[in-house]
Image (tube, rainbow, N blue to C red; front, side):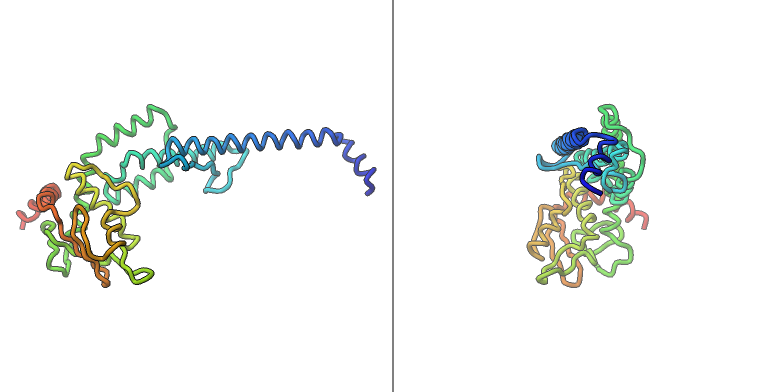
Length: 265
């Protein structure tokens, strides 16, 4: 095909000038659309993220690239992310038992969620405020059960109440360089334990990260102390804990029902 015949074929539909103009307008629109989406992602990050560099991405279904003909799918993903950020900001999961927190994560990931409005957020806050005492009690009971495992071979552990010294098995492991660290699948247990004790001490649920103070301390040294415990980690996976505040420990046992369990024996 000659250049002349090619130009003739093009001119049958649109002139070259019209084609170039259509492309240039589309390019401007795409750039403007990308700019608006980028600005929206940054604005959401500033509003609901942890710092000014955070963003909430616009994605499609199943975390794939957006379908530009299906804005609702991407907005649904944004809605889920914003609800997750709101729950994290309210530190709701820090008040929950591990199982309750897992169920909340499942709901945020899969259930139908309400639109983001002042009324829907106020309803969520009010609901969690009503449930806070029960959530804390469930978390206390869960930590209590994990700290007094039935049939434990360690004499320091008790099935009736949590003693001053406890041994947590399979809690730590060796990693690069031979140093000890808390196993990844046990991190949440230590976070829950610290949150419960801080709550009972009137300090609120103060853990905001993915690791507990105890875990961070063990990363630095296998022997040491935090505000709640003196600890020693061993290469066999065991973690020995000694409660520093015996009044707080007694309050924990009373709240969890250890004394009641002992009376039934």
